Image (cartoon, rainbow, N blue to C red; front, side, top):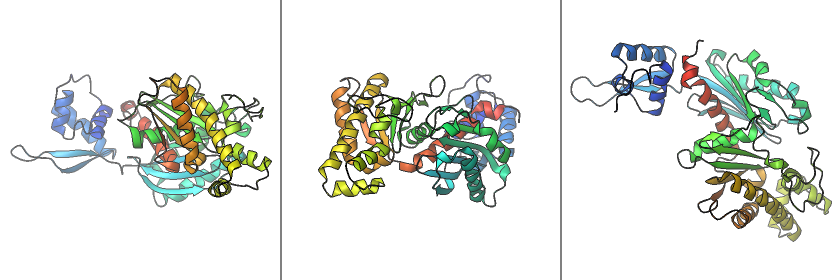
Length: 389
């Protein structure tokens, strides 16, 4: 391994990063990579052992004499609490420090009831999932909510979309129950993070995730990192107006927003207006399977409008992959095919040369995975490890 100046990787947090990534798995490795002295390496490793972040694992290969002791990141050294709130379904989980789910519950929560109702239920569920684990093991908390979030300010900025959540500083409420760092983001952002980290990391660092469900939103991964924008409003693709939308009023106050003409809510509303008794997407599926031509037209129209907006985003962002998720995309393959056809036809040749348009591989679990990584990326970062307790 190349030797680096001791000043480059002199901290305990940087040593943990080397162990987590596998770049250095013995004390000797750490010394060679960082240039630190043996006592300095020992001091940092001892601190990580004492904090439960590293364990001494199986013995490494010997080059003669006593084999060196290997060091491994301790995923069992604590837990993170995560929750992915959606307009129609919510997942709550406890994960270890490797991001693996230890316990999970799926809840039927109406987010329109507001934070006064929803947050106590979420926190009660975390308590139940923790079981016998002490609260002191909680290293961080991550929550995705179906609202615009000003990430740096740690509050929702939903405006007219979810009025009873507007301006709510959620982290301080959770920190009263669980004294650990709390991170809050838009629900589609955390899904995009989860899909990227679990499926496309190292393969596609520029990704556009589109959630087509009760509402429509997007999460943008650029250069391997989530793109939130100046105030957290990046990805509001659902409020881009479409052509020939029919003058439908959107809940944001504008007309013909993509959200108001191509979401699950819109599909159900349109079919009801045309005389079909549909309550859920399962009813729509039954009509499609029954060969109802009018229902297929509604699905194709939604795909066309969705594809036109995504084509614009592809021209602007040039992602390597577009991932379609959410109830509608997961249910209707014709919608995915229709989007793919429009995007390839309307986007530039260069932006679509190697573009892949795929359905989500993680499905509903992407939100939990993304929330866990959002938390872990912060609490295990070198600067967080090195900061005073």
